[in-house]
Amino acid sequence: MRIPIYKVVPYMLVGFLLVSACKKNPGGSMTTQTTITVENVLHSQPIVESGTFQGTGQPALIMPGQSVSIRFSAAKGQAISFATMYGWSNDLFFAPANPGIQVYDASGNPIEGDVSSQVKLWDNGSRVNTAPGPNVMHPGVARSKEIVEVIGTDADGNAYLPASSLVQATLKYNGNAQFTLTIHNISGGTANQTPLSPGVWAISYIVGGQLLNATPFYTSGQLTTPALTAIAETGNNSPLDSSIKSITGIFTPLSPILVVVYKDIDNPIYQVGKYDAGLGLTQLAQQGNADTLAATLKKMPGVKYVYVLPAPKTTVLLPSINGAQGGVVSQQLTVSTGDRLAIATMYGFSNDWFFASNGNGVDPTIKGDISSSIGLYDDGTAINQFPGAGITQFNLAGTPLDTSKPIMAVPNPNAFTTLPPIPEIIRVTLN
Image (cartoon, rainbow, N blue to C red; front, side, top):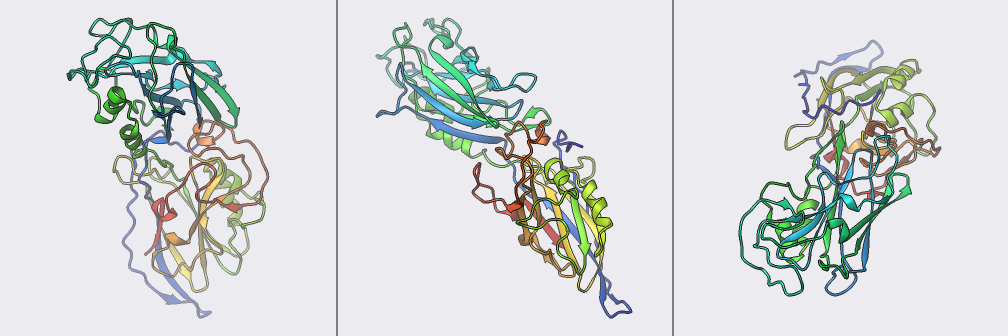
């Protein structure tokens, strides 16, 4: 089953306050009560990828006849947006209509070719417009109006060709959810010849079919921001880049938590360097479904207890969104001297990554924060894509593409991104 991540209000399962009572078994081992609590403590961000682009000269303008290319990854429903100044204007900028340029059609097929019709020309509203051209005086006369699309003429009567006659945008699909967007300045020889400034681009996470930030740079009909104004008036992309970087990062739910108590055997969930044993870890790592693996483990010699802990109402443990607390689950355990404890949960926005206890788990009779005992692993059963921007990721409505590699730790940084330290994503405590 798919992880139902469409509910973006996290809920909390309040753990029990327990007083641990110890007793000896006839064999001499000590039995005690403890509670395991697992939390998604990730402070999530709405933008999955972002970056800058610029020309090759000094200053780094994109002159008529020149082009720049942006490489990015995307899942179905995600869109790429960008902003760049109409250089020979007071405060005009080019950007796609929100939420950006769509890169897949309704059937999930990648879009290729000319997408220039989705690029628009916008008036930032922060300066009185004078006739565009190389003699425009900057900064010009200040004013405060809402951002509006320039269609034919601006608010001050200056004429403009359609944006698609000045900027050509072309998409190329590179395979494995990776694209190249090429922005070509084709304004040369027109009545609106202009350089383009260095720009900024971004792609929002999509959760349950909804983009977390569908207006990363501007909102038509509203006042601008200082960061966008820096591009629209002077072509300085640094403030907007800094603003977008501050909300670019990681967003992922955690699947229902698998908890196993065992004794006198190695960690029964996985072994680094070995291939997935086909006992149900694939379903957990690719789909967030721990039920198959739990059923298998319950029959395994040496396994004492198996639990699958879904978050109430949301099932998955959502990260912190806009400062709200992330998902939490708890379970009371009865453990004895010599027992080991291990957990596993899917990195929800991946192809087949999972968090799990390192090595042979932990001694469940200890108390306190054991988050440092958790690692992030690649199950080796699905081809990897950018986490949160992959067309074959199960929780982004995709079907994982099979591969066969040994289970390995996920490096950090990895080929796609840099993750926060694991204790800043998942917190595990015993009390």
